[in-house]
Length: 293
Image (cartoon, rainbow, N blue to C red; front, side, top):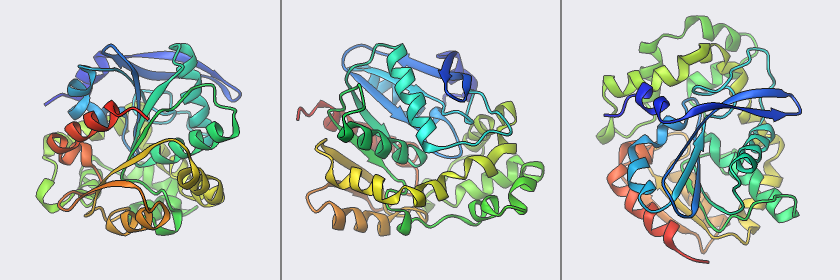
């Protein structure tokens, strides 16, 4: 099993200038060939991709990073985090690496960043060409998203800020396990590594700030849903049906909104397809990323 520390050793923190300041963002690249950018979810980090990384890098150049507030990136305690700013960071990192064309693979929190990037592409303001997007479980349709109890507590203006002082590794692991399918429960060792990605740089203390992506999705619902449904970019979906947050009910909504969607539904997988069933997800990703529009 790859550890979080081993994962960090394969990348580095680099300065990314934004309107809100210059932030150190952990970034990792590997492989050769066409670019593929992988965007991670809440509340963890780009470490979420470690199970499929080696297989994908054999044929393409991979790029991933920790969003601001996540993993080994800066985690300013009083910052107002937003999906739009994370999209700005994505664009800044692309510029720094000279990326002009890249496939996108996105999960959870990352699906909203992907939708914002598709909206910018449709507007003609995105400098990078996106030939294909692969979505893994996430709240593409905010009205279908079912937040977990811990997420609702983080959203509460009184309880949320207090949770940072109360959360423990044990409580984190117990809550995260509920989003995995019964047949693919993470081991204690795996949960420990995921916890390290959250707790690094005191990230567990800013969960109430990072969780604001949920109201962010509601505010920008029409923009992001339109970008998803109307995009000319080929869109593919690899979906765990047993995800209590964005599972079978979200997959059904995707099929309704995009009738011709290439939607692979995994009946025994929960919220984390790449962690729960990498042996299934990796070859499907390989196939999808090899397609030419």
